[in-house]
Length: 385
Image 1 (cartoon, helix red, strand yellow):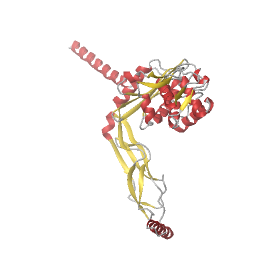
Image 2 (cartoon, rainbow, N blue to C red; image 1 turned 180 degrees about the horizontal axis):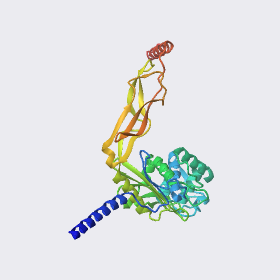
Image 3 (cartoon, rainbow, N blue to C red; image 1 turned 60 degrees about the vertical axis):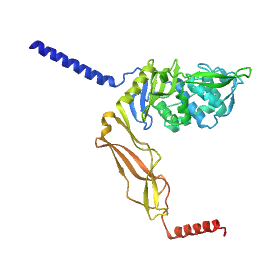
Image 4 (cartoon, rainbow, N blue to C red; image 1 turned 180 degrees about the vertical axis):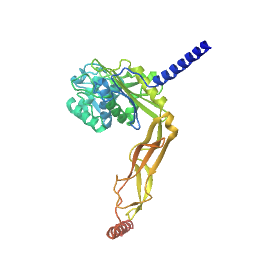
């Protein structure tokens, strides 16, 4: 009997160890000095390790260099490579002084092959100098919400006070991925660009993405590698499964491929995206009392979505707090209601509903003016004015 009890206790101990071990393994154990897993739509942080620690970002810097170039609207312009750009150290497209190449091809080489020479050529073409372009980078980062980031160059080679954080890089990437051109380039495994050699002969130049995760993880669709002696191996990655896109950042991580896959798989396996209303869309039309217009559009002011643990998805409920009508005057952007998300009957997120336009209060003078303008328009349309 004692032997049977001992065997049963041993089995229970094994089962307990497996259960707790599986639960422990569910949360990634990674070696990065700074890391984050973020939902791309909502910006919710699903995992972090020292996410606000300032670290050298290496070539992940090029994410913001690329988005500034893309948003310039000048991708089809032809650039002339300077001697300074061609001499840039580190990873290179092997540009040569005087070479002509389009900005689009430079951006492609920047993101796929991590060309430092391409980064300088882009900066000089768009801003006239690297220093002026770096000012643009820092202003752009601040406007996006990357408040702990300071750039000193457009490529990420080590420089004093050239620092960012896992959170800031995820925030910058979240912004960049909303641009279809950027998203398409960083998801490309391999492509050709037009290339003029030193003799002026045109040929195709093959570019293969440095981001091995595109081959290693089926759902992967970006974003950017980086490595320097100071920064160590870095990776900003993204992946999409069904309706959910996740962003992972690992900084100074000698297991960056494995750790990034761990983070992304952890997110998809443990969290679901609950979508209710899209940012900027018209949620409903609200009647206006005593207004110069009868209705006002109620717009969704932010992403009406929520990421929750998969086990809580079925318990998500939504309540809309919106009056039956609103009294004029109403001002564009004015809060007129809200969407409240509940998980297990606990409010966890609120999204404002705002007026899509201004509706002035109806007065006798305004009514007369409106009728007068309408009459003038009709007379003009009939050719009587």
